[in-house]
Length: 336
Ligand code: NAD
Image 1 (spheres, rainbow, N blue to C red):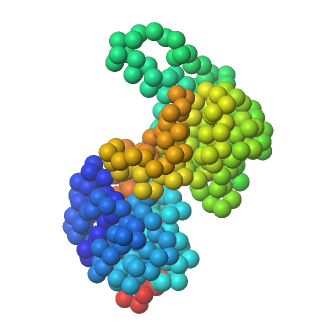
Image 2 (image 1 turned 30 degrees about the horizontal axis):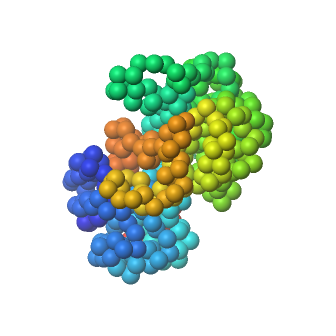
């Protein structure tokens, strides 16, 4: 089969090409899948997409009309895919249900430490030979409280590191994780976690129930000197409400690897264009905010696992096998 892969990063391309060799032909594109680019997929039974692809009803209908019947999403999250419409169209959609949770958990900690210890500002200063410490004071984490919203695979890995720092551990989830309880985590309600935590890290999927979970009220419930890290999905945080609170001078630091309007921006070079997103433009002006463009998963280990799982997903589809990675169980190939 020939697979057309959209949104392939330069570092990812050789990994994809190597993994698919001997299985299927892969053709990699750096453009993301949108309504404008969907026609390129015409004639390809299987395509592969990345996290910022737009797989809404219109795009899915274009793909189906062009003969596509399988979508191999190269991520865990699938909030960008209208699964009901995919099912209605008889498409098979598979994702990568798990890969190194350490990639994301370690990056969440990188953001937390960078904002706490003012690393970006310090680096800028030393490059200018300004060796003063004014404005660079951080806080010890030992003995302080980490609040983890979502204690699944990534939340657990984050919690293990917090435990290593000697932090008190609070958790909030619909299901308790025994491994986190064993580390000393106390599960509390969300309001208690928000009010008591010095560092709050989000590790939840984006669902209708979690959309803008961190909105105006949640932000106001947080300590003025808290650190907030979001390495999950941008839609968990109401960014306008966050900007309003930041303007009051609140929070020691905010580290964001994801942003609710990131599609069409993140992973792209926009440096020569006037930025049209005023919220993002304002966000990056705060000295206590660090924004990265959805790179938490971007380690050799995690991307290698994502690529291998994507090959398996296409193999399973071609062989008519069901796997736990299939989100929409369409009819086997040939009957769809
Ligand atoms: P997971 O499924 O192992 O854990 C998610 C946790 O959220 C589970 O414990 C679950 O019980 C809990 N949960 C689900 N719905 C909830 C709700 N309504 N209220 C409270 N708790 C709820 O997932 P994971 O592998 O730990 O990934 C977490 C998230 O991280 C993903 O959904 C994805 O959005 C994000 N992620 C981001 C990147 C990145 O590069 N920035 C990479 C991978 C994953």
